[in-house]
Image (tube, rainbow, N blue to C red; front, side, top):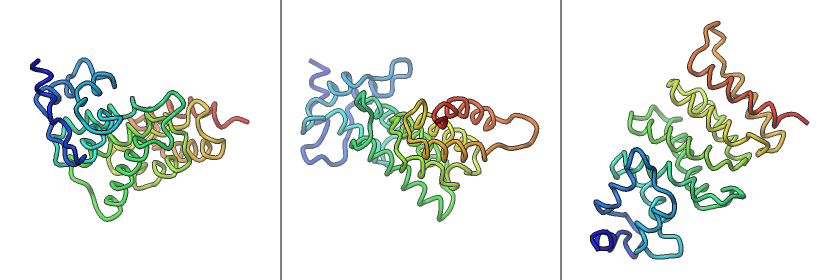
Amino acid sequence: MLVAAALVSAVPATGGVIVPTPVQIDTLTAIDTPPTPAVVDLLFASGPGPTPGQDALLALARDTSQDLGLQIRALRALPQYCLPAGCAGSAVHAALATIVDDYRTQLAAGPLGPRDVLRLRVAMEALGATRSGQQSDVDLLTDPVLLRHPSRDVQVTAVAALRSLCSPNLCTPDACQQDASAVRALRSGSGTETQVDAAINSALADLARCVQP
């Protein structure tokens, strides 16, 4: 009964800003057991519409005024709502691509603060996890503003996301070739394998299978 009471008015009827209950926050931010879609759907069952759990995560992911840890968990949970056939064309994919693109636009104007850099990394990670295979996602993540960001952590995240997007055999040969070429060009050439080089080598091992005729 306490759980049921905590779910009341979890999502406003207007679909605006969400004020999560303590039960929802505790469940979404659990460290050892990330919530499944079934658990999230139960948590936000009082929300309007046919997909209240997904809608709640989308609202949390877009709202930078939310607790940073909660927003990160929402971003990471969203790809679980992709259908087995993929996420292309879904609300989840569109939201994640928009979040990453918004940060790309901001980076073109100037550096991001540490919290926004972390949000960007998680959003790129989640976009890769959608495994969309979309040319538009390859174009987005190979943009030098992201792939050649001054932070090695951002570079590693972009490489990993590109690996997930196109391997195995998810992208067209042209998109996969573009993906692999951009990743390969990021190599440091220092003679000593860096954190980024290690991510590149792992990505290219998978991408090699999708660029072959």
